[in-house]
Image (cartoon, rainbow, N blue to C red):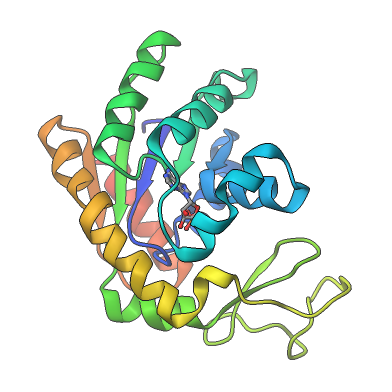
Length: 217
Ligand code: AMP
């Protein structure tokens, strides 16, 4: 089983959920560029200031900036035994940059795993996603609601919030950007013989089983 994985799939496909489980299972870091950028925005860093408006609109941050962020992260010691990339690459130039970054760091090429989910399902899932502003735990009003409405199960302060980019009009934009800029990565990874996919639209546990199966083939 490859231990350097790129998770592909539209927003709301469950990449973050699966990456978290696989990262614990394999004891390798889960690198979510979306989480890294949101953390930068929260902390008010220079990077955060540069990306906030772009993220709120559902647009993509520039390739140059993202490539630097990922290069820095992959250079860290905890990536030695592998890593799971979630949200990067998102464009063909980012995929090319990733290849160069890995070569430069003496690492093996990645395996791409795509979680395939239809647009209608993405819309349904994302518009009902909420998260805890305190601990970041993610809920879904349809599939994984909190025990008490609007409140984090872990007793954090503040009420559960909707990400600005999970509002319905922004989701449509993110899907448009996904189809235009990110879906060409499917062919890219197929052409280099590094693509596998699962098209199970089910519970996270069912998707995880499908992923383990396809990766072991
Ligand atoms: P995500 O949580 O992966 O959906 O990412 C949230 C937002 O962060 C995206 O809508 C983009 O604005 C930005 N972002 C995350 N990763 C990338 C990337 N690889 N390239 C460009 N923008 C990104």
